[in-house]
Amino acid sequence: MGAINFNDVYADAYVRKSVEVATEQQIRKFPSLASYADDIKQELWIYIADAVAQFDASRKCSLRTFLWRVIENRIVTIRNSFLPPDANVLSIDAGEEEFPLYARDKVRLAELRMDLAVVMNRLTSTQRQICQGQSTDIIYQFCRQSVHAGVLLPSHGRYVGASSKPMTEYRKQPGDRLGLNWMMPNVAGKRAIRHVIYDSNYWKSFIHARLAVPLGDKGSLSLYGRIPGIHQLFAEHLTAEYRVKTQGRGRWVDEWKLKPERSDNHWLDCTAGCAVCASMLGATLPELGAARPALKAKIKLSDRLTGTPTAEAAPRTGKLKLSELRSRKNG
Image (cartoon, rainbow, N blue to C red; front, side, top):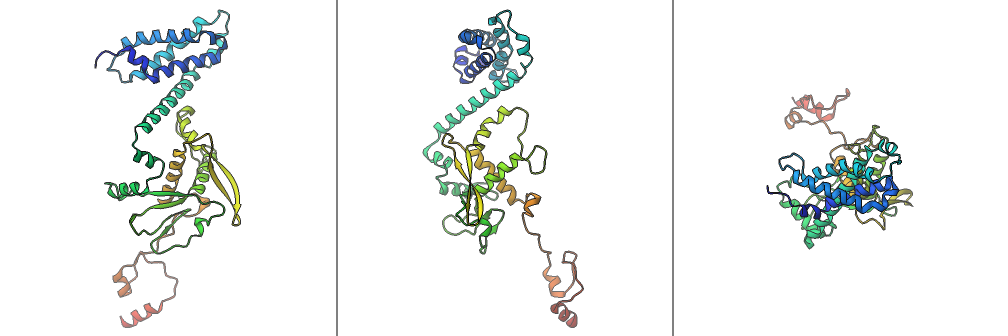
């Protein structure tokens, strides 16, 4: 790997955002530094230029991580050089450990948003339609032709409002599979592939109810780690909609609607879909009852013909069926 050009580093959006975030954080702690914002950034870039020349490509960390550590280590020294001698730096530094986490989270969030914007700009018109849920036939074709077709199932989130018939009242037709506010209908026609339909309102309420359960209690849904900023974009998607309590057909229903200022709710839909998948695989909560009915005891055809009881057969109650009496008489 050749020498790293500082001009490329200076043009890197991640590094520039890191410098801005680090400077803004210090100005927030010390408002008197606002007039020195450009000077602080200039000093940081000087340190970055020196660090680029010393970067070893054989390091395990990337160049961006390396430069962030440089900013993290130098920002306090630069800040103190612009503060008056009588500033109470010690009281501020007591909480200095929180700064790297907070600033790094904002940088990662900004980088992720930029990456998403770049990806969306590079998508073809067909790919954009898939992201927006407008290409059902393409998705069905992909699921049929995939090497994982045996485990792939297209799914549709159906808006079941208060005025709609709840999925719990659906009548099962031959070939259908019904579950907790989801169903796998029998298929026919050009879309002859098994798919899942679920009540999107119910499962979004289910996800938010799980997030509201205290951490560690049964039924709680929690996120990993101790740095909230890592999950900020995920949290923004989960809170992109608001619920409206609506009454109809003798019941109250949460009807979820997209907030005007939020346009991205993809991870909320994905999380609800994951909960549906878990329900299909048998996961449930005690208060919701069994996710699937108990399996009947299996009886072999040979045992049925000869009347021989098996270990898998249901326990006897002491009464004999007419068919068993006839088989004993003839046997």
